[in-house]
Image 1 (cartoon, one colour):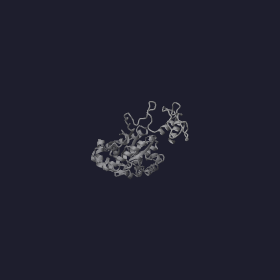
Image 2 (cartoon, helix red, strand yellow; image 1 turned 90 degrees about the vertical axis):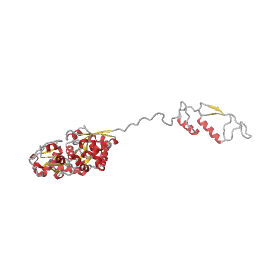
Image 3 (cartoon, one colour; image 1 turned 30 degrees about the horizontal axis):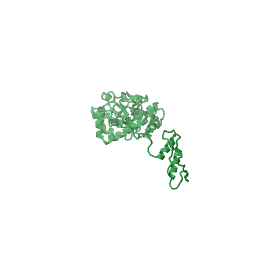
Image 4 (cartoon, rainbow, N blue to C red; image 1 turned 30 degrees about the vertical axis):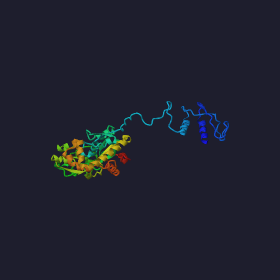
Length: 392
């Protein structure tokens, strides 16, 4: 009976002093005497042996070993209940993912060049990325970058030349995306002003809208034609370029969007001529960029990456759906629905950047060198201080 031997041995090992039983005498097979001890070492019948107590024990290893050998489920007692196999109560509601809030200020009144922003918002491309983007219109074109530098907004739109000037002045701004990768600005001259071309600007009145229009574009134009700065008047017109031209208060304006202002003035019967910034000798630059405050970039980087990704998706959707995108655009921003904007939409759409996050480093190097060579900045700023790809 070797199996009985092993069982009794386990009983002795697992025994608890709290419980003892006496095995009754059993009849022996064959001619064995009742008092003889088995040759295999079994205890004599009638020997008192200890059996395990199923009460709770502080020795978890012993209990685990006992349950493992005896088999079957754990004993469910008031002092040691079995764990439930499944939840007995209703499942609580799942909390929604956190939403990142970003305030973004335009560089000008809403325009077709801002299409990616409005389409991304209208098609919930921001919301699907857990973003709440507050798009604001400035009261003055000088305001957006000032508010950004003062941490009053999270992001702002501007142009690459203005970014170079502001960083040179110590402003903590950095480019994080490009919405339009080609220049948009131009010199627009009234045909009735008697100006044959840029070389005849001495003695004229040429208005501008922002700092870079005067310090970079106008200065480059005058230097190219060897005209002293004090040879002409250049009032700051802010948003009122078109109004000043219609009223005849200026002979021309610099910094106007080249595919919008001439169209709008032509609708009113005013004939103009347009000269691009490339014709002024200014290197090619990004016409519309998204800038952030460098001091907050580390904390906002994840949200900015998601925003730029939404802009890329929106731009692709616009180019694939030109007619539907226009209808969506004017529904989202009814003020855009003008004859001028409608006729300019194909040109504006063609200028949108398909990869807004991508950084054209050479473009920033070339423009910075141009500004330094013409003494428009006090020192040369490395690209890493001017622009970043938020994905890197």
